[in-house]
Length: 83
Image (cartoon, rainbow, N blue to C red; front, side, top):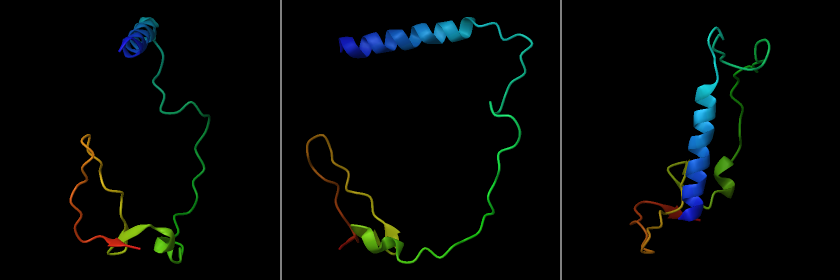
């Protein structure tokens, strides 16, 4: 708990330092980079069998692992296909 408290104190100290900076007359930025970001064309590509390496799938979607609860129990599984 002491480590968490120390980290929080450091974070709050840093926040106070940032708030103390005089930003009057400084225009807000949306990026620190000069010029525009290059964009690639938005083109759909055939990905092949992207589910081929998925440990589980359901109706052509990846399935996330079951949620583990603090007591070690798992959520009930419905409709998932194990490979």
